[in-house]
Image (spheres, helix red, strand yellow):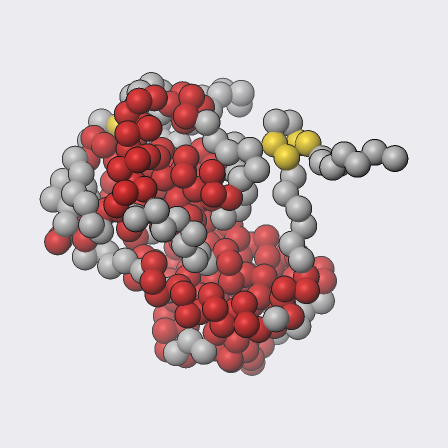
Length: 296
């Protein structure tokens, strides 16, 4: 009898173990997450108080690039939100020049993938994704600076941590749960690219994203305002979020979806967006988002 551990490979990646459903029945886990989440909050005022060179639109651009890298590398779903948590926390305490923003984003993805991945992103691969505008040693130096500024506190709570707990307490059927979870995760990733969501707690972002996902499912679109109100009431009960804040977050999620959903996965070209600081030529299907230049 073999004592070897059987693992399933997808390309070069190892599939992670399935989540233990028993944990969803322990309310202490959700309560601990709610107690810890505010520890990792930042304020978007860092653009006025800390950062003199970095602007909100630059964060938008680099976060879109980071999301695309994580997507093309098939990173675990919590790598991108965690890397954005690192980026915001770093920017809120340490000023940098705008030309270093892509290096910071790369370092954030490197650390987040080491925390969450069984097969993390490599320095060499991230350097390629920057089109060699960031050198390996520069990336390693930024990684160390990032860890020092975060005081090595890298196990931050993100909205992804709440999704399964919230959906579990909504008492939906299995098929609806799967569809809602998939959409909610995509919505959370999109919200992470918008700095306005930095002031919201992870549980609030997760609740707004789950709410938007459940309400927006085709099987629920004809159920009307009462169904919407019932879902919002359940979400408020699960996370104890202020109803007005929950409604505001849901509206923000809807706004972000309407504005950006059609642009997920696209890189602006020089011809169509000449003013964008981050651009690249249209790329073939087998290429990566490395064909971009940071020209702030």
